[in-house]
Length: 292
View 1: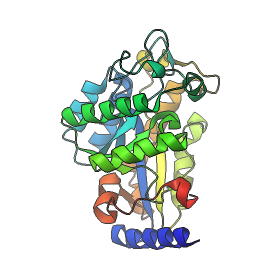
View 2: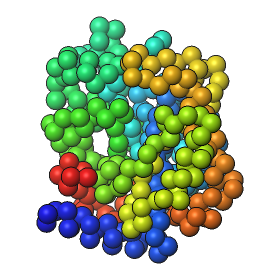
View 3: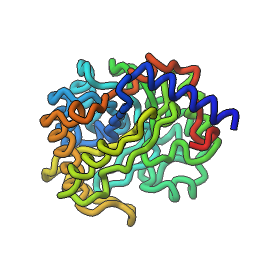
View 4: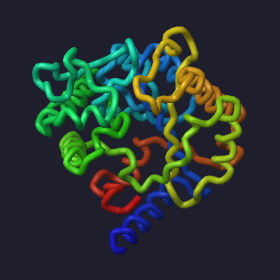
């Protein structure tokens, strides 16, 4: 109860610093750098002037292009999308540290496993997990990106308490925030919402947004082109017509920005850089510890 009250007071204080109108929204777009199609979508959002947080996959082939797009974007806070899985058929990636250094994290071809279940079934070494996650952070920093926070692709890097401790250790060492460690309230993602209703879903979310909280909307944007439509999830739970769903999310955000929907509904957009500047890193709380 004491921890909950501390976090509640912290949220109200931070909220007051960020917005006097009562509605605060943090949009986090994941998987930037995964493909050219996703990078093109991110650039459209940046060019629209939308303020958001961009979580970058350092392990992927299109990371360098993502760096060139994000490096000078003033409306974006950049995070490392800590990656321990590679889930797309015919498009796989492996560790930044190299498969030889982290053999328990990869399959026989040196690729990450497509699911959390297969990852843990291979009995991953904690030391190797730390080696790889550290390599991803350091590569992002060396690229020239100004990294503000960490989050986690498919949730794998924080799926177990011992892994979560590694992420927390690295965040402390590199002076970075961690997504969902500021008491954020998760909104219902647009990802699996029918394509034709994504904008209406976003509109409803904004109209019913929780006041006096930092609301988090996790998005997955992309362009529905030959590249992205060729990517098929190796997991049975993967979304069908993924590229169309990602393009639908992109269109919903662009339409909301073009129609000044956030301003009309008095929703202030923030990113993780804003939160860290107002909140500070020393007051982060694990969502597991707080019950959030």
